Amino acid sequence: MNAKKFSSKNTIDFYQLAILHKSSFDKSLATTLSAYFLSKFYKILFVDMNYECIYIENSEKEILGALIIKNNHFKKIKLKKYLNVSFLLFTGFLNSPIFWINSVLKNRNLYKGLSYDYEISTIFVSSEHQSKNIGTELINFLKDNKFKNIIVNTNIAESFYIKNGFNLIRVVNDISVFSLR
Image (cartoon, helix red, strand yellow):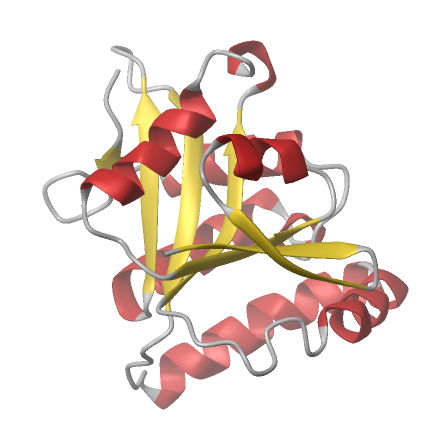
């Protein structure tokens, strides 16, 4: 099983990705969206915005794990796509407004003053494939494909990032910020 990057040649089932994401986390901003809306959100992120999806699937095309990374060098998106993203995110806010407000406030200023090219937005692996080096393979894909100056924040996977060569930069509001140069 090798990691792949979503592209026109390596297509991905966005709905399957959304289901896996939602099953991997109790609560995150993305998981406040329905699976349908999350799959639509992914399509816009990967096709029209600066996000990339690295994933591993088995021979039956079942996604075992995925890493979503954002290129920090923004490209302009059309107003219609921006409004679509805003609508999708607003549905998540309506589903869980207190969680959204707390998350936004807690994550504010995490990267203030830091220079980086990529941000790992999330990484998730199906429960039955955890502890089988899927996450490490996803990180190795980044290293092998010249992704440099990467930053990530977490409050649950500190040891994973340290094991994979990331360095702790700071801790803000109980959230650890790591980098990989």
